[in-house]
Length: 132
Length: 450
Image (cartoon, rainbow over all chains, first blue to last red; front, side):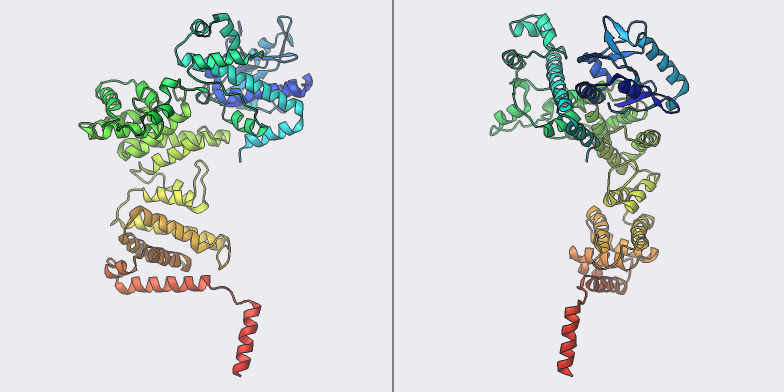
C-alpha cells in the first residue's frame, strides 16, 4: 500500500506544512510515523477492520481519520485511493481534535475539498508521503 | 538493504523519546490487533471471548482498543490460553523492532490454536505410519470444484493462500499441494487443463495480481504465478501472464516502484519463462543477460539465460541455438566494450561466460547441446573468451570424447579444433604473469648458461 500527501503545486506539501506548523514533538512524530508505517503494511481494509482508521466521517463520505491519542489528539485525515483504491491512500489534511471539534476548524470539509481537487487535477496534486 | 529499515534506524538514532514512543505504540497495536484477528479467526465474538476469560464483552472491547495501555499480564495470559496459545513476554532490541515493523501484516499476527497447530501435528505424527494418501481429501474437493460448471474462483483463491486445503501443513508451497493432489486423480490431464483455463481467467480477466482477494494477498499472488509456471501451458497462459507483466511494467513506469513484492515478481518471471508460445519476451531475457538485471524483475544474467532457454526449446531448431549463441556473444562484446576482459581482472570474464554456458548445459543435460551451441557459435562468431568458456564447460562435464565421437552436424576436426583452441587460450589466461623476481631468475639462468 502506497501513501501519498496532498500537494499544492508548485511546491506546497500540505501535510508536511501542517506537521511543521504544529511543531510535533519527537513523541508525537514517533507515534504518527508508527501508525502510518502500520497503515502502509496492513492496507486500508484490514486497518479499517481493526479500527485503526475511523470513518467515513459524517457528511464526508470519502474522508477517514487516523486516530492517535498523544498529548494532543492527532487526526490526519485521509482517503482511500483516489486513483487506485486497492493500492494507495492519500493524506489530505492534517488536524487535531479538541473539545469535540477539529483544529483547524472545518478540517473534514477542507479534506473533502482537497479530495475533489485531487480527483479533478490528477497526480500532479500529490507527492509520495514525506515522513514526519 | 531495506530502505525502510535504514530510514527507521536513523529516526531511532535521532532521539530516545522518538524511539520509545514508536516502540510503545507498535507494541500496543501489535497486541490489540493480534487479539482481534485471532478472536475473529476462531469465529468468536467479543461476548464469547469475554465469557471464556470469565469477563465480559465490554472488557474485551477495551483490550482490543488500540489506545488501551494498562495491560495486565494475567489477563493477557488468560486470553492467549483461551485462544489455544501461550503468552510470550520478552525484552527486545530496537534492531528486532526494525524487522517486526517492516513485516507487520495480518497473516503474521495469526496463530493457530493448539489443536490446529501444524508443527504440533507433525511432531505428534512423527514415527507413526504415514497416511497412505495425504492428498485424498484435497483431491476430492479440488476435483469436485473443477468438475463443477462455475465461475467462482473463491475456492482456488483460498487454497492458494493455504486456507481450507485439507492435509496442507505449510511444508510446501500451496500451489504444489494442489498439483500433487491432482497428480493421481482420474483424468488428471483434463483437470489440469480446466485448472489452467480458470487460472487464465483469474489473471487475464480478474487481474488477481492487482486485486488479490483474502487475508494473504502476497501469498496468493506468488502462488498464482508459481501455479502458472508449473502448469506450463503457453497457448493458454502466455496472454494473461503477459497482461500481468505489462500491468506491472506500466505501474513501475508511472510510479517508479513495484506493486508486487520481490517473491511475486520472481514467480511472475518464472511464469513467463515456462509459458512462451512466441518470442515476445525475448527482449526481457536479453536485457537481463546483457545487463545482469532487469527494470521490472529481480534476476541475474543466468535467470535471463533460463528465460531464453525456455523460449520454444528445440534441440534441432537452429534459430533457437543461434539466439543462445548470439546472447553469449552480446555479453562478451559488452565485456570488451567496458574493458573488463583480461587475465586477472575481476570479475573474471571467462568465469562469467562459463556460468552462462553451464546454464545452457544444465538445462539440456546432454552433450548434444554442446555441439549445437558450438555450431551456432561458429555461425554468429564468438570471440576467444567465449570459446575458452565453452571448452572449459565441456571438459568440466567430461563430454570431450562424446562430442568428438558424435560431432554431427559438425565435422570431427571442427570440434577438436574448437576444444584445443579454447583450452589453449584458457591455459594462457590463467598463467600467472611473469613478475620482476621471476624475470630476474630467468636472466640469471640465462647468465649461467651463457
